[in-house]
Length: 233
Image (spheres, rainbow, N blue to C red):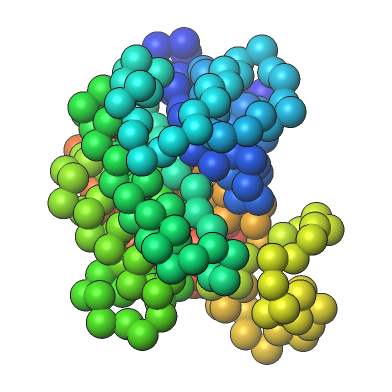
């Protein structure tokens, strides 16, 4: 096993660890030798117990002021909080996608100004706000706000179809259909799919491997696949 000096190990916070990608990110980070401590912030418990794991329950992400102490001294934030199209009203979707992201970023930036930020966006995200798709507009609005928040290292992930890997109850018909045809879809359109565990691994790895200095990177699905396996790009 790789030995990382204590002074070089990182403290990492994950928002949305009870979700699919966040859950994989949590498990991967807990077993990563470069990670000293992992803090999960979510509205419900993850059900995970680990010697280097802290869990904070936070009900209202429209106000993250109470998280200031928890977020102090963090090196990395992995933000996977979100919702599916059709699962909530349009107003609620914008609140979760934009307002929650911006509020969390505000408090993190004040508490840990040198922290890196890894954000789960989505393919087609439109920072110009002209897209007809609400999901694309709202993810784009969140991206734009993060780019303006002056995080020294910001990584925006725009995956296409995220394959769940493990069986689950799919959120809508489109996801049920995509899962059923996944083997063929992956073969015909390899750059339009990404495994949930591979996406989570990439979101953690990019922040851990990055050195000091400014960096702003937007990663499309092809880029994410290349991170996981350079031969896939």
